[in-house]
Structures are given as structure tokens and as C-alpha cells.
Amino acid sequence: MAQHIDGKLVSKKILENLSDEILFLDKKPCLAVIIVGEDPASQIYVNLKKKKAFELGIKSIVEPMPADTSQQELFNKIEQLNNDSSVNAILVQLPLPEHIDTKAVLEKINPIKDVDCFHPYNVGRIATGTKPYVYPCTPKGIIRLLEYYNINIEGKHAVVIGRSNIVGRPVAQMLLNENATVTICHSKTKNLADITKTADIIISAVGQKNLLKADMIKEGAVVVDVGMNRTEEGKLCGDVDFYNVEQKASFITPVPGGVGPMTICSLMQNTFDLYKIQNKY
Ligand code: GUN
Image (tube, rainbow, N blue to C red; front, side):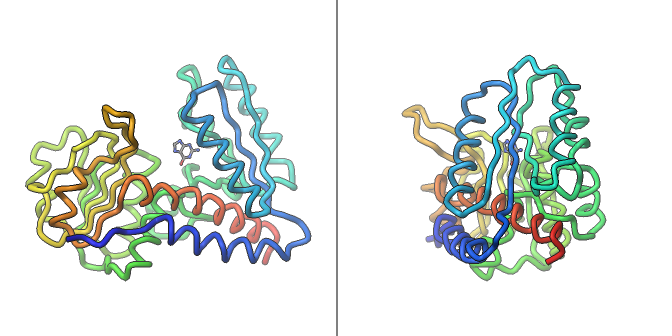
């Protein structure tokens, strides 16, 4: 029976330390969040970020922009925040409306304020095994959870399912930098179960419930579930058939309460880290 990896507990500990450090600062770190349009999920996420920042003494500025905002107007807003020395961290909430070129927008953020680590400068640094200003929030949270539970990464076969720029690709690079042997699987992968059965560590970041079943993993595998899905009854669930997989795995992250709380925790930590870099701590 797998040990549950408790992201709520680990994030709480990290945030307590962070809060103590921020308490003594005269000038507080500042996170700016741009949200374009009215995607309901994005609005929930942005409100959560605002609330968490407030609890920690981090200043947050939310910049809502209408759904028909032009790319140029968004560029101008980013430029304004880049030039505002009181803003340490900039986050453009994704997804953006379809008429906007997301990659072009992310490239406008000054890399030293790129709290998500989505700018090609920072992404490229991870890809070359060089430190970015800060690491991307969800992958950083995953690595922290593995470290907290003393799960060794070096020499392990890590299988990442999903190749998104937010989770799959960066977490694969970061696991490689930790000396794992990494396989990336995606929607065109032909023999998914054959590959996952050889994994010591599986990271599933797809967004499809019951994607990973017990007969697809080896005994004692570590299973990290990044999926955010809903059951027919409307309950939050991940990509993993949790009840059956936990009988076979050695460690498993529940949904909710696993990776989710770590993402927002990394965002707060990253805001503080950028503040420290910009203020030459
Ligand atoms: N949308 C879903 N996840 C994320 C994230 O980590 N950062 C941003 N900016 N948008 C997101």
C-alpha cells in the first residue's frame, strides 16, 4: 500500500518559513497577474493566488483585461510592468484568448520578472542544465515533494506523460538535470503501458481521468498525479485510477492535496526569490 505524498503539509511548512522571512522586510515583494478575458477556471486560480499572496504579506496587483484585448495592448501592459521597479514578478494567466499569440506574449516578459519560467531565456537555461532565475511552479513543486519524502531521482527511470510547456517538458528536463533516465510519452505514443511498466517514477500531466491504471505500473513505483479532472459527480480527480494504483505503488500523490498546493507555494516562493535577486540579497 502506497504512502500518500501530502502536498498540503509540505506546502504549509514551506509557506510558514516564507511568511517569517517576509514579515521582517520593510518593502514587500510584489506579484503582478494579468488575466485576459473571463475564463471561469482562470478567475478561480487568480483569486487563489491573490488570497495566498495577501496571507503571506506579498503585494499582488491583478490586471484584468477584456477578452477582445489586442496583442499590442497586452504587450504594452507587460512593458509597463517590466518598467515598474516596484513589481518583482509578472504572471500572464493562461490560456489566453485564441487571437493572441501566447509565445510572443511570454517573450515580452523581462526574464528577471518571469515568475512562471515561461520565457525562452529561462526555459533554455533549464534545457542546458543552467539555473534559470526561478524554476517553473508545478515542476518545482513536484521535485520538492520527491525531495521531502527522500525519494531518490538519480539513475531512476522517470516516465513523464504529457509534453505541455507548463508541466511535461520542464519537469522532464529538471528530472534529467537530477540524473534520472527520462522518457516523455504523449498522445501519439504507441505503447504507453509497456513504457510506464518500466518506470520507477511516473509523472502524469495529461488531464484525462483513469489514464493510469494499476496494470500499467510496476510494483513499488512512485506515482505523481498532476491531472485536474472532474468525476461524473463533479468531484476533483487526477489522471490516476487512485484506489487501484495505490495498492501497488510505493508513494502516490492524491488529487486534491498532492501537487496542487505545491504549485501556488512555488509561485509565492518564486516571487520572493525574484525580489531577492532584484534587490541583490
Ligand atoms: N494556467 C494553468 N497553469 C498555469 C500556470 O502555472 N501559470 C500560468 N501563468 N497560467 C496557468
